[in-house]
Length: 437
Image (cartoon, rainbow, N blue to C red; front, side, top):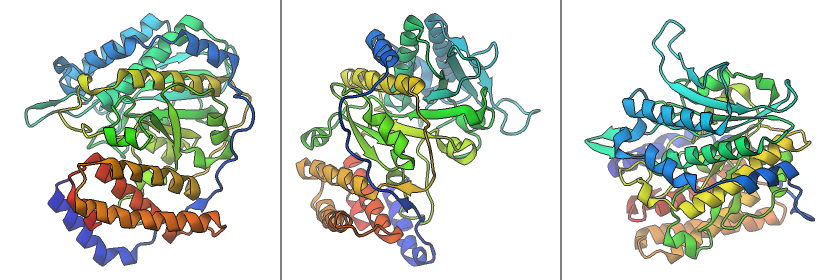
């Protein structure tokens, strides 16, 4: 969207937003702090110990190479990426997910239509045939070639694909006997114009799962896992942040994350999904940011969304392999592997309820982002002034909630809008027009 279009949308909002109400979230209390030592399973520790992160850069460089032309759905580059992923899964010794095939064609236009997209999947089976299952999801498509420029999609989302391939290698080497099946899904057709539609490869998967949907205990959806933290974020102490969204849906999900052993160069930072899904020009709506869209709409099973966040290269031709932080990606791979293997092995009932938010945790996490604004020399004075006013609002909201005042849809919406503005300013520091929000 251009700056002019955004400003126009904001002006239009002023005249119509009074007719639209904020979504009515159920507000939950922050989970109790971890007490005692980590409780991660022995299998999780074993698999993490065999993880070889040296494969990450090679997989990213192949998937985001100019030869693959951005991996847009339906292109030769997309097909070549798929061949690479299948070959890596075979080499790891994982079983095909869809019967005797690693590929799942999608038919959103009907069974007699031409296949629209192609998902890729593999499985590491638990000893119990009818066991429950978990799934890790990373879309492998990207934007392709736009106005003659290759959008390589190194961070979005070759980084996450490479992470899952390394995890698959570790599973193949270790062959742990887990309580649940572990599925690796590489979804197609996630980028515009398919995002948040039934044409997404993941939407087809959630409606046509190869295992019973009611036995899906957890989905871990990964997007943007290898970006290099900006100097401003590092100064604010967020250079090693891995944002974990979705724990607000049930205390069992927060407990699962708390069980883990700390991982060097990874700080899990919890946020509620509503903090990244609000759009200022569309009150009363929410916009899923990745492949959990169809899961939430159809299967309605527990999930977490994991990301290191957008960088300034997001959806530009500058998102190339040379811009990634491979040490950070390796650290994230270790943490995600531990989480996934623990989730596959822990004796726990994971719950999920939609439309929940943890306002106190969100406000505390948001206040940390303002430190990055203060450290930035690239943010204009107009944006600084607007965000300083926002920060005072967030501080007042947090103080009132800590005194026991319950959040309301209106006060939480104020927090959401402040979140979107500070994220936008960090993403595009020169975007003075964000101050008009």
